[in-house]
Length: 115
Length: 113
Image (cartoon, rainbow over all chains, first blue to last red):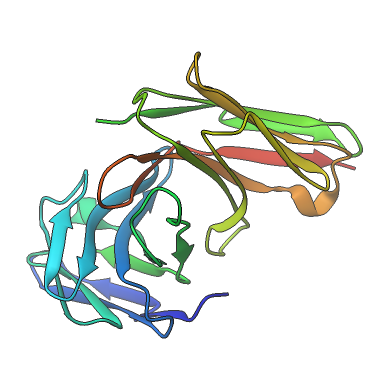
């Protein structure tokens, strides 16, 4: 497995509280991604980063924000968690964003439950 | 934007038989098509990929075919084994300066002994 870790691996929180998930990589890859995985929906892109301080929205970005202050860390924040954000969150990395070298490698996932 | 549809959502085959999973995509500019396997409770892992300049790629018991005209691609697993049981995801990349891969909804493959 590529050098990707996520923390925490499991979290239970209450509606309305802020939550931050962390993705850490040791591969020095430029691109980092946050996905959520829900039954029947596969993997849906939340946000991605193409460099330090460079981020962009994915298809399901509402209610989420991200930050990348260092190459190795990509943070996902749920500003005010809702029950609809209960999901498994995966971080992924890729060496480049070009179409020829964009194989993505996934982290182990974070299971988030919002009560 | 790109949309990827995957069928079937569930598939059960006898051990030793072949399994085929099909995907269609909407953006004709897509040119990279990876397949991921996800075992229960694990992360998705790349098993094979194909780029738009080839029509077929094979790796041991796994093969992928691409029909750019029809905008569909398929995963073929031959001589299935119990360890092939997993959820399989197809994906297509949007051709842009940043790599945004759109995933299909997944196929749960079960291998019957």
